[in-house]
Image 1: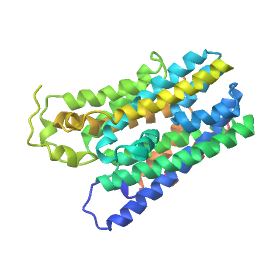
Image 2 (image 1 turned 90 degrees about the vertical axis):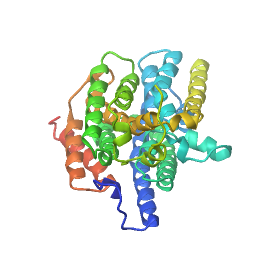
Image 3 (image 1 turned 60 degrees about the vertical axis):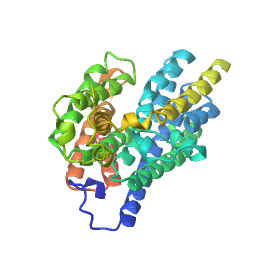
Image 4 (image 1 turned 120 degrees about the horizontal axis):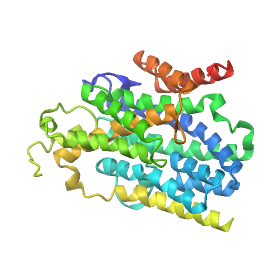
Length: 259
Length: 104
């Protein structure tokens, strides 16, 4: 994938070709992530949800981590309220994605609702790997739509198949998810600063996992980026404009922020 | 049962609200250099955290198992500039193979 190239453009290939590559990547992400829906569907029915409840979660809630948290709490004998709270805790990061994505995506109407519904880890990550708005849009919609299609399809398959393939681990699907996330992170690790932030964030997520409720470790790790962004190093104005959002920040170089 | 349905529908609807509300943040705030810098760094931190939790946690516990090998192969494949799908399938295959052999 071209996004794996270590440096941002010079672009040699046509924008159309780059957009096609992004859309192909979006399809791949959709298929790989969607397959994980099999284990969600199977786990949901094994946890005491019926087929329709599993499908409502995949079609309307549509954010994998929250859905697994929901059925995990129900399956573990927790209350329905506890299940809802756990899923909402995990969903907070989707709000963050919307904040990041808002400048690149259309507002209002059906598309405005669709962009909200499709805002998940995968679509936000592929969008953020784009170097301009056209690439970010292509990444967001391709990953979002394909994940939605395959996630719901395979949730249905998993719920119907029941527990026969509930052990997604035997197929390595849990490692596939880790592989997908590292593949999305990889092209961003262009600077020592990025590597440091990713490393510290990973560390924070791991050490807080035993002590924080599900979903919060990832948010605690997000604070690493906030802290790094607020560091009074002056780098925010001298850093080379590489990476997602760079065009936006560069256009504002003249503005001093009061603090 | 009805209570479970209420929880399913309420949590699903609120999940959509969570997603929608992020887009309503005022853009002039987002365009400040410091904020723009944070929003650029956030995905890096989030992805780093997701890699870690997806690889080495199970519920509230830290667990080292076949997923680590899957992640290791994924990194090798990325260093070799393999396409996305190859990386993902490679990670799954490595973990599945180790488990099938009973080594992890």
